[in-house]
Length: 79
Image (cartoon, rainbow, N blue to C red; front, side, top):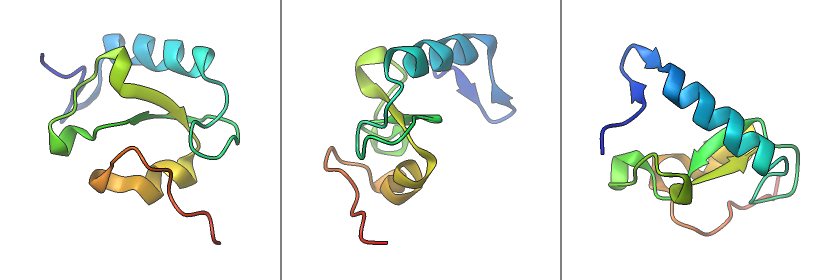
C-alpha cells in the first residue's frame, strides 16, 4: 500500500486521514493529553503503513518520544 505521505509533504488523502483520526481520537492514546498529531502505531520505518488500524491520535511529546523505534508501549512520561 503506497503511503499518503510523500517526500514532498502530505497529500490531500493524508490530510483527510489525519483529520478523521484526530476527530475520532481527540485524546492522546498514550497519555490522555489533547491529540495534535497522528502517530503510526507500527512506524513506517519498521514496516507500518497508513491504514486506519495503524494510526492513532497522539500529542506531539508522545509522538516524538516514541520516534521511529515505535512499539505499542506508551513512552515514559518522567519529565
